[in-house]
Image (cartoon, rainbow, N blue to C red; front, side):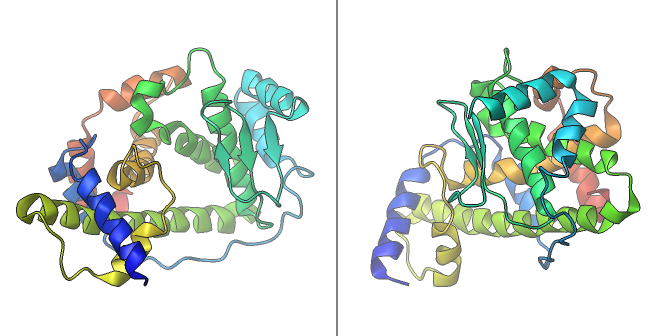
Length: 270
């Protein structure tokens, strides 16, 4: 690893060590412990040749909420939703509220579409489902839609896809929490000593590969994903959500520590 990248990491740690975090350190450490497992990424099946030709995602939204379906169709017709396997990456532009969705040619594209279209719906709803001031919850609605999709895919042929998606969520989130753990260690060390020495280059390399907004900081950015997975799963199991616009308020009034304690005592909870 180049000395330039290591120095860039050190400079980021110096800056981000002063950032406030949206979760208390105790909760972060508990999440690190919960996700501390050696998950292995699994390959997705390839039974769906074209997820738009066989419009599972669109039919899901039509069944779930006709208004969402119409919003998506209008977005596609107006070029505000761009779906292409040639795109460099998938994202929703938070200024234009346009969605750019890169397909990968396997069955996970159905989940990708539902997830990113949820972001598009959120950003183009009035009022927004997750208001901008609660951006740390911005993934919750998309994860919730994924899990509603799991309920929708009742045909047994989709069970391998659902199983792979659940596993790979945990795989990527466990890697995220490992990065959070090392970033937290480095930030704490810098605040206490004013310097960083004997860095683990393998862990640094993993961290610098994340593409995130420096205004958020790595820890705040990465925590959004496992937090969304935890909260959306909790809502699916424990809450009867009458309106998607209730989701943000539910998040803010849910006792996260109780959920984390339950997950700690019963790993199968998640």
